[in-house]
Amino acid sequence: MRPGRQLAVLGLLFAILYGLVFFAGTSDMSLTERLKPQLGLDLVGGSRVTLEASTLEGNRAPSEESLEEARNIIQSRVDAQGVAEAEVVIEGNRNIVISKPGDSTGSDALRQIGTAAELRFRKVLKMTDGSGGAQPA
Image (cartoon, rainbow, N blue to C red; front, top):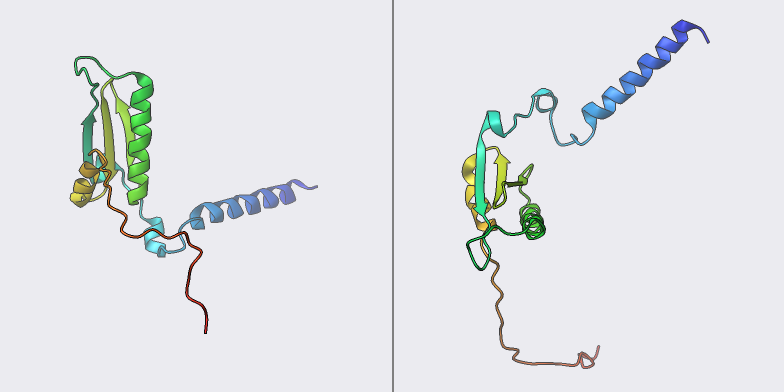
């Protein structure tokens, strides 16, 4: 193969890869939105919530395993709310930090993530076995 053909194939390969990077995951964005750089938390600002973990005794730091489990639970809560590009990290041996770039209007939703879950019970008024039902006419 001639060197000119090899360079042409390489250039074509780069063009295809650039097209995949440029257009992948951006089907709902306009051309100007694709070209505009997305700024991070340090440049655009946003919300940052710090949660402090404590044990039942309160005088010692929780273990690394329990802190990682708490981080995973909080990460799943953040993901369930649909908060885009949120970051949940462990700082030190007690703190879990949730950071979300963008406007700070979502900070109440981030603060609510750290609250304890509430389990409610209600009385069952009528119980059926599922065998009965309306007969079709």
